[in-house]
Image 1 (tube, rainbow, N blue to C red):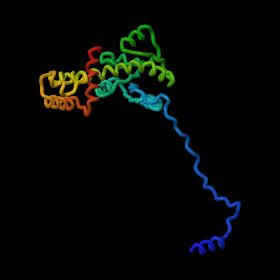
Image 2: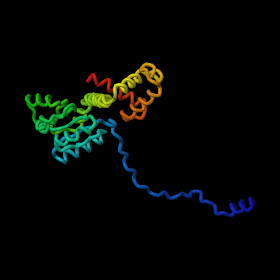
Image 3: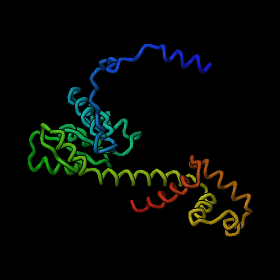
Amino acid sequence: MLEHLALSRRNAAPVPPNFAVPLRRSAPARPVRRPSSRGPGFPVYLVEPERASRLALVRDLTSAGFAARPFATPDELNAALADLPPGCVVMDVASASAAEKDRIVGLPTILIYASLDAVDAVAAVRLGAVDLLHRPVSLPDLLSALDRAAPKVRAVAVRDAALRAKAAVDTLTPREREVMECMMEGLANKEIARLLGLSPRTIEMHRARLHRRLSVTSLTELLAIAFRARDAEYF
């Protein structure tokens, strides 16, 4: 068998020394779109009556890493506000003034103006403005204003989480709160049972109810809510 293979190789046609395999021409590579250097940003709620401007701003802010959501009027934003996470509002001074009676409470707001006098500036501050930008607004100016608003957005997010945690903890029974406070001290079931004069089995039942009442699946999540609720007294 080996002799047959060797004979076949000797009789095979020689390969030309300069033999070259033709290369298939490939399509030009598409440019790689680099991710935003800013990374994921906080929500930005754009209130702009003109649809074209609204969509353009959303596109620019999304490409810059922000979670932008458009609204045609302040009323639209107010209607959705209860279900939205904390963010920064960007709107025209005229829209903000028209919505003063239904003021957007608690959210940092960047106001855009065409012309502004001292009276308008005072009104803008009263409306909760954290920054003022002159129209037409360039994207770099808007991004800089959002960067300046970021600490306030984070503060609002912390406050919002604390208040929601307090609302959840307020639904607990006095005994469940006692058990939770012992858990916050790092006590084990037997220690909590001895301190409260209950059986370890009863403590286990209270802990299981705490998980259900607070909609958590781990001790870490439960304690996070408990400590946030404690922080709510500072707001």
